[in-house]
Image 1: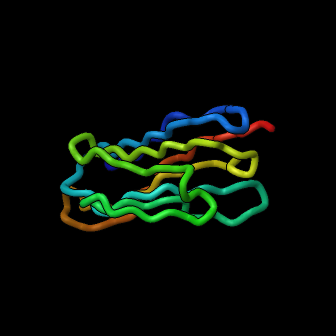
Image 2: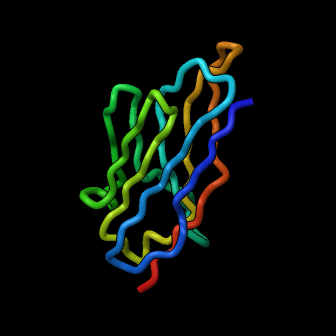
Length: 120
């Protein structure tokens, strides 16, 4: 009964910006880590950025200085602000959350993914 729903993907020109959002809903007691992953065609899924409940962040080297992850705990939402986008950022972006559900069990939850395409 827990869902993660992403929004904000689409087509953008190189050098442009885009903001992704991911909201968790359902029977949620608490959310710990929230992360964004991406997978490009023919490549393995990679961690883009992560954020703890208290706001500590980490980033892949390839996006440092360009992407910013943030969260709103009151809204159970994580954001990914992407600036100075490059064609190599093209991928399906998926959010992940470590959630304590209503049964008081910690589980991993994933969104369905949103396509980001950066044209050159």
